[in-house]
Length: 227
Figure 1 (cartoon, rainbow, N blue to C red):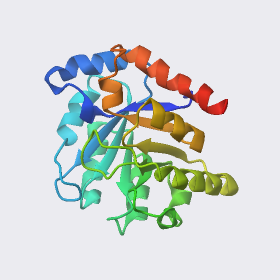
Figure 2: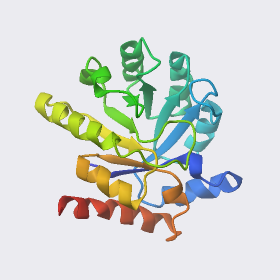
Figure 3: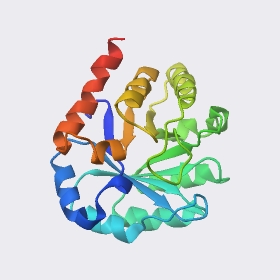
């Protein structure tokens, strides 16, 4: 069983000139997930990775590969990323009228499926899909680029969804992504978050060693629980 919080470094902040070495260091770091941001230049104003890159990374790691689809026409990416070795795929609620169908297709491949909401999206939009998802990813920045400032109002939605999950007995993991550092991670954990997607604050942390950084972030849960 994974010891909370889940630590999920975002590959978007890794050193791409030395990606093989980065993956090897992550393999030995104690992290739980590797977060894979897929952007198509349409839903968000940036271009990143495709299934080919994920397939190559899968050959070098047994880490849980968490794919965040920031794309139009997300359905067309399900099979390619499943075949490439993804363990989980997440879909934005904002641009996906057939999200239930997409979620169930992912589950038909025995993979985990999640839903993502942007900072300006109400949790009311999740009501119909919550019984079917494994995790909810809260964007605490507007998606598209790394290195943005954390939007604190996101935590109000985290608290509200936590109450809904507890009331209904859902088995849903809550993850947060965007502007996560030591201070914002602590606030998120206090709000009830289960997992942290960490970009620059992980890969550029002054501790340098990924195992030490992972241990440091995991230890924040004790501080969060003591306050």
